[in-house]
Amino acid sequence: MAKQPDRSPALSFLYRTAAGRFLLKGLTAPPVSRLAGRYLDSHLSRIHIAGFVRRYGMDLTGCEKQSFSSFNDFFTRRLRPDQRPIDLDPAAFISPCDGQLSVFHLNSSRMFQIKGSRYSLPDLLGGQENATRYANGLCLVFRLCVDDYHRYCYIDWGVKGENHFLRGILHTVRPIALASCPVFIQNSREYTVLETEHFGAVTQVEVGALLVGRIQNHHGPGPFQKGQEKGLFLFGGSTILLLLEPHRVALLPELLTQCQGGREIPVRQGQTLGYAASAQNALRPSSAVAAAKA
Image: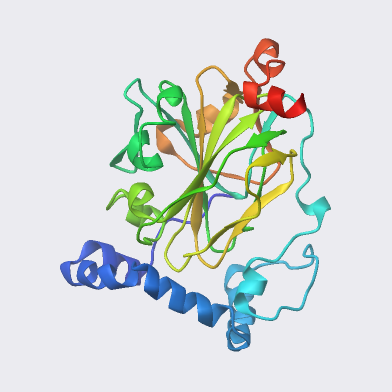
């Protein structure tokens, strides 16, 4: 079920009034997020768990544990494996996370538009080096809400490159902010290139959000397995972007229909979103993968 549209009076004040935008400059600063993070890591923050569960109607029976040492311990709770089954068909292209998915086509200039804000891949990735290969490809945007599962996994087998952290500020990633400013190139974010066996070179970008100053990726460069946990976000909403080279992935037709016009649809980690575009592409691993296997 799709999430309800923004109706927060506080966010409307912050993003739609002059006084609110003035206050926003302080609230989106990383030091504020770090201070909030220290509190949410403390035992005192446990008092917020019960109210959060009631507000969002959450069912914790699928979690590995039921008792938590802090709010962030609860927020980053791990689900049992049976709660997020992974489609291990080698040709199946899966969602890395829970969230609201939207799909955007990248033009030859490597530009795309989300909620009225225009983005370029060089700005998103902090330079031209990795942007050229995605001209005429796809950008998949997974927007995680606060009550979503905030751990994410690898979408295939392959070899990952370095983690690149780009420091920024921390807007919320709710639609009201996306429509007001270019959140994805202003917010703190981390990206890595995944040289996958079946889908070519996929760049994954994790974007921090308001009160989510910490993006925790577990691994440096090296091999990875499909469905293996890649990392997690701490408290708040957040976003994952997947950049796909052209003609590598054929998304399900019904998914493309539902996502027309930038509409969001709910997806879950491990869910099949499409398949390798052709058997030829699926059986042609990148040079980095081939070298790792040699």
